[in-house]
Length: 601
Image 1 (tube, rainbow, N blue to C red):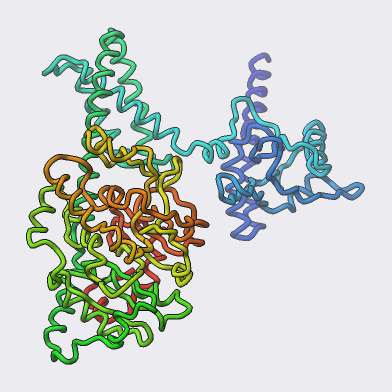
Image 2: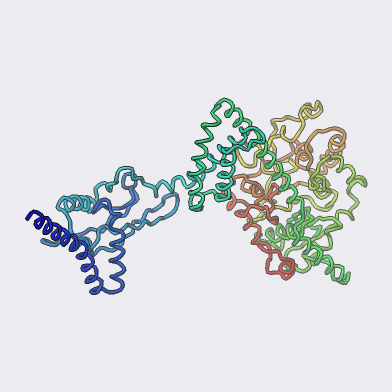
């Protein structure tokens, strides 16, 4: 009898077990037969994701400080007797706009709040979620519930987008420190493992600098390296020795960085002294075209204006076709009375044909343009080139004849009384005719001063001039205000009266015998025109576009003349992109010669 009872108990137990297994299968089969293919796929996804749900009815959203920067959620109204579950099931995916996080607008998509097919819902869960939604509707402080240990990872990713990569770099440095601490030729198991892990991680990371660019492989290889580093810390546990090794590594790294900086500086200066391939091509084409012309066709128009002192005369010393063209074009374009402009371009015999041909092909109908060859003028000393070489400068720009020929202006233009002197790396943005109405007050040169500390254009006399020399310190003051070449108003009559060209020659000869100043025309210009300069308003001449000076855009826009002083000239690849546009707008890139020589903006 007892055995029969046990047998029936087992039968009943197995029957219930079979029903519990088969019932869900029947339910799923009936469900799949009654829904569409899209619904079937969604239902299967619901089943696959069901086991990962740890807390029903949790609002999954991003927490923000003080609830600021969030758009208010769409209010949800409930009718009397309406089921909360059915209302939520009709909701679609929503987006929350986060304006101005690190300067960008980001959108984060909320996950589905509740599953429309959820079969049961406890009353406690209803009360909890109704409370949260009511808080949102009433615009109270937005603090969605977070599980223990849950963090606001998305906001953190905007604030520190390179934290993980920094951690990886630190681990790499730590691994290298342990390898350097190992005895030379060591081939132990820990050293082998450390080298292998280090090599794998370095390959996976590469040159990545942001967390978003990290591959999953790099993150996977980080943990094995951390485990190996832990083993190494147990082996190499001599902390004072490791600290000494790290200091040595830091010193070597600093030396390497300094060497790289010196190399970069050398390459930058080398690039500044090199003529771009496209401009060399342009000069060759223009030169060949010039010599193919008949001599009578090489003459520029409006030559009768060249020596008329009643007109506005501008001069630039240049060996660069495009640079001289931009200075002339921008000056004429910005002028209110271009018919009163006479523009003089002084160059050398090597570049005279190319520059002449360019202006012959692009003749300005109203303004007069004169091209002059400094080598054909009998104004410079016969041994001038040899004297310039004694300045001991590796930069040919500083010892160029054209760079120092400006000190012979009264001899080059004997029939003129006043001129504006340009460097060839400037762009004119305003009409300059008002310069001729400025009272020079007996001074020779009008210039913008550069002696105010804290400004991008600041220079001091002691930086460029050797005041340890007794002659220099006795004649000049290191506190004297400096000024800039680039755009200068010059009174040639007063220059001649004070015989400043002779003063320049005297100082120049002294400088060839002993080091009195740095190479270039600016330091000797300060001495030659010492106490002979008239300060101009700074808006006439803004400098700093040829170097990282931090000049403000508003100052550039308001300037009459902008100056690309420095080595980052706008016609070079190393030029600063944000400043190039002011120069590019005066270059005719549509010209056939420029296109054939592959010269583009």
